[in-house]
Length: 252
Image 1 (cartoon, rainbow, N blue to C red):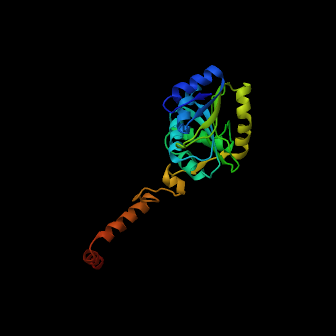
Image 2: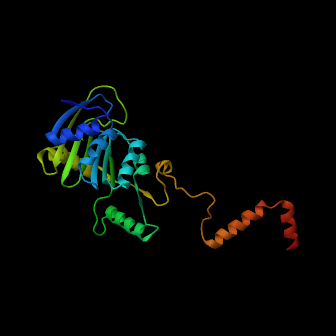
Image 3: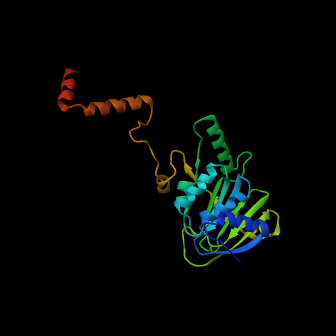
C-alpha cells in the first residue's frame, strides 16, 4: 500500500492512479481535502462536475471551491455533509436568484441560471447543489468531466488529524466498472437529498450572506430621484444651526 505525504501528493497520487487504475494508499492524517483537490483535480478536463461528501466544510474550503468555479475548472458542485453547513454554503457558493441585473452578458448568464433552477427552457442542473445527511459516515471526493472520472474515498479532512488514514482511489472512463461502482450509489443519494442553493439579489457572498442579511450601501438614497432629493434637503436643513433655521422660518 502506497504512503502519501502532503509534499508529494500532487506528484505521487495522479501517477499512482493512472498506472494502476485502482489503488489504496495511506496518510498520516495530514492530507486534507484541499491537498486531494489539488492532486487529482487536474486529471480530468476543465468544466467538470465536482462531488464532495464530508463530515463538514469550512469557509476556507468553500472559497477554494468558489475560486475553482470562477476559473472555469469546475462547472458544477455536488456537496453533502453530515453537519448542517447550509448557511456557509449559501454564503460562499450560492448563485443569486431572481431577475438578472447589469450588462447584456450578465443578463444572459443570469437567465441561464434561472432556467437551470426552475426547469424552464433548455435547462440543466443548477451549478451548486447541497444536502445534509446525518447518517453520512464515508467521505468522497470525485471529479467527472463526462468521459473520465477520478474518485477518492476516505475521510475528508479540513485540517491535520494525527493518525493513519486509509483511502481508496480509482481513475478511468465514467462507464468503467470501477468508477460506476464508486459513484452510482453516491449519485443516487445526491439526487435524492440535495437541492439548489441560492441567495436573493443584493445579498453579498461572505458573512452577510451567511446571516441572511440584505446589504444596502450606507448613505445611498432609496426610492425615486425626487424622493432622494427631498431626503437630501431635509438632511441638509437638519445640519444648520437652530438659529439659522428659525430665522429662515420667520422670513417665510
